[in-house]
Every structure is written in C-alpha cells, then in structure tokens.
Amino acid sequence: MTDHESLPETLADATDRELVGIVAVADNGIIGTDGAMPWHLPEDLRHFKETTMDHPVIMGRITYESILETLGEPLPGRTTVVVTTRDLETPENAVVAESLEEGVRRAEKAARERHDDAERIFVAGGASVYEQFLPALERLIVTEVHREPDGDAHFPDWDRESWREVDRDDRDGFAFVEYVRE
Figure (cartoon, rainbow, N blue to C red):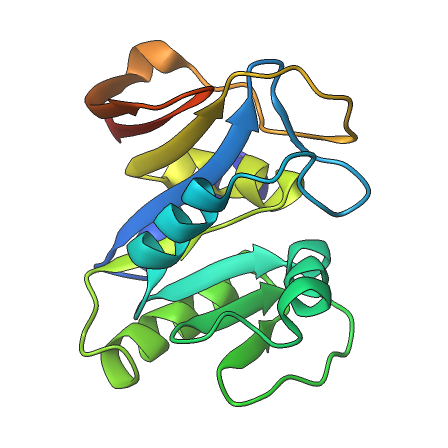
C-alpha cells in the first residue's frame, strides 16, 4: 500500500469529529472557473453559511483567496484552515497547514478550543482538496446545481453506490442533498 492509499485512514485517525464535504456542483461536475463559482445562488451561500457556522472549515489556497477577494476576510464565525505549502499571512480566525493531516489536526484543535467542541469538520474545496479528502469523508452536503457551465475545476468522480441519500430539498434550478457513506 502506498502512502497515498493510506492517507484517508490517517486523516480519519487525526480526529474523532465527523469529516463532512460541502460543495456546490453543476450537473456536469463543474465546481469552479478561474478560482470562482460559475453561478450566483444566494440561497446556496446562506445554506453554506448556516451549515458551517461555528465549525472549522478546511480548504485550499485558491478557495481561500477567492473568499478573501469576495468578503475581504476569511469566513466569519468559523476557523478557516488553509492547506498550502505557500507562506500566507492569516488573521486570527484562519490558520495555514502544510499537509492534509496537519489541516485535520488544526481543525480538530479549533473545534475543541474555538467552536464549543463542534462535532463536525467541514471540507470546502477546491477540486484537489476534495479529491484528496473524499475517501475519508463520512458525509457529503451537496448543492446540486442544475446547469452545465464551463469551468476549470471539477468535483472528483465518486462512487454513488457507496453513499446513501438521507435528505433532499429540491429548489428552483438546484437541490440541497445530503449523503452519508454506507
């Protein structure tokens, strides 16, 4: 077994919290274009905020920088854990981790110390972070966007047979869907 194949086990062992992927993905698998989402769905943004509030959120540098560009700051009310090997300056509610394992450890610490012992750690992209975390995720919260936009970032292929849909809220042009690993 290679180190990469054992990675999800290591990630899951780094925390006793539930690892949850949260993503908005188009019918054609697109999640982004040029570091941004190729749609504007205010209901999805509210859903993301309500779901992740007062939890640690792990993401890659491009996703983090897109949020900074949009909001002017990291996600308020959450600890943002940025997985990158680049040297970044971050405010108090954001930390840098140089590996996925370090990211989970930092998120675990934030859940305990900053978020009233939150039971979940969210993984919020981008494409490479989702791909690396997917085997370790226990739950997926997906906004299924019923469009087929152009884009350069895709959600990784995932074996839907290994997941069970536990909740669906259909809206006009999209749906909030929750899956748990079987």
